[in-house]
Length: 72
Image (cartoon, rainbow, N blue to C red; front, side, top):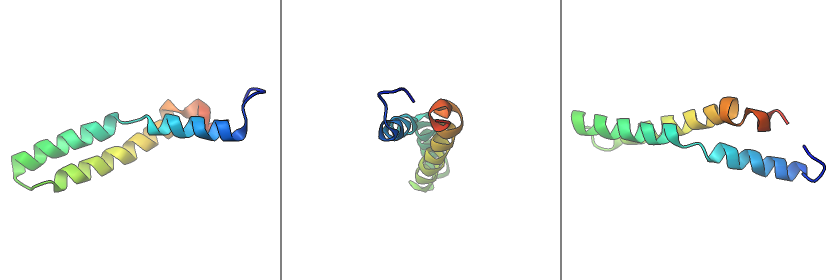
């Protein structure tokens, strides 16, 4: 943390970093949509894929992409 940053700035920076992760969500939606169309299951696979992708994005952001901000 630099002299001009407050803990609130660090929290906002971490939140922005974590919320900017979206690639696994998009992938989950895509795979779920293809599975739903192929298996004729409706939108359930797309919902499951989106939830799984969102959880993966948060874990990836916390452990890899935003690691330097988490350790502050």
